[in-house]
Image 1: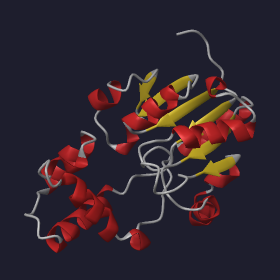
Image 2: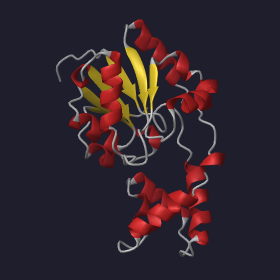
Image 3: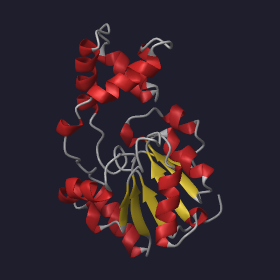
Image 4: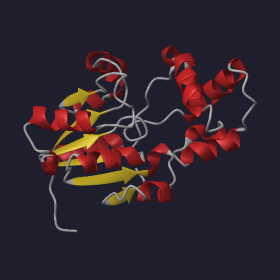
Length: 208
């Protein structure tokens, strides 16, 4: 791979910069399964489905779309745990800054950027990033980050080809590829299996 020094590094948030709350997702799933009168699903099955990036595979194909819609409608976002940064994040930002490389967040969270800034202020991450970009609205699927990536690059004044994307799910990588990102790096810290991440053809896969 030829040397590449990005002018901007774009970071996904959950599972990339902060811990993903698997326990909360699984407990909410168990509650919603009961609410929707779906047969119970074991934690091991839920964990395997999550790590395979196919979380709702335990639902019959014919009912999956309507089930997913009902699931997210019932999901308790108001009680979602506060974000906790990974221990390596602070030093990583310090090193990027020392190299003169700027950073921004591009997240699939569908909230106003200012609200997210308020919610994550306690993490200290905002001291290191130039901006926070969230999903434009529910009309954009949560796996599609193309518009968010392009907006982040445009507002910083670089092309996607001059930026690097870091994310913990395959679609972080594929979205970045589709807009012509310079490099795309996958991290295992979100819990997705390495072979699954590999299928999106990242330039590198790192532990975190």
